[in-house]
Image 1 (cartoon, rainbow, N blue to C red):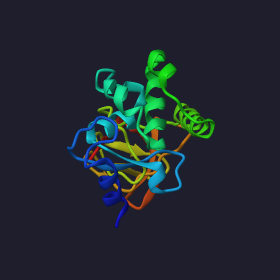
Image 2 (image 1 turned 45 degrees about the vertical axis):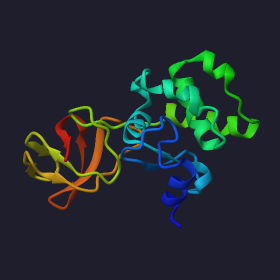
Image 3 (image 1 turned 60 degrees about the horizontal axis):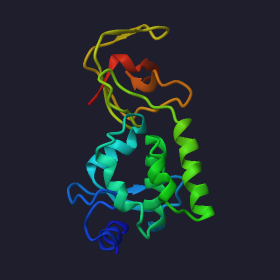
Length: 185
């Protein structure tokens, strides 16, 4: 049985955070070892929210009133992180986490605070390995060519120290490109 099948069985085929049954996907609760114990099944809306914790929809997360009582530690960890980010002290005071589980939750919060987020010209979050399109002709200094508008840059990499740049290959040359000149494709 695959991990997704096990998650479906454990959750009853619904998002373990908000109980939606649409577009479910496994979500690894970092830091993770890839096990089912550190993975939860979530819907597309929760996944979008968790990928950019700086812009949480408080109304959507009312669902945590119920899911924070889950018997699955990974669900409680995510609930704790979201409640902490939303500064919902009332629910934080009610949630109970064993010391090791609270340490896991806090560790993930610290990593999230220090995570560099790369966004394209439209504000879409970029991930390593994505394909982006250049939206303006760009002169590539030192290489003697111009990267034309519409050029696809595949399998990008993201420098962890600078959210305004990505690395990618154009005409076989590895270059740094400002994210404001890119659109996720």
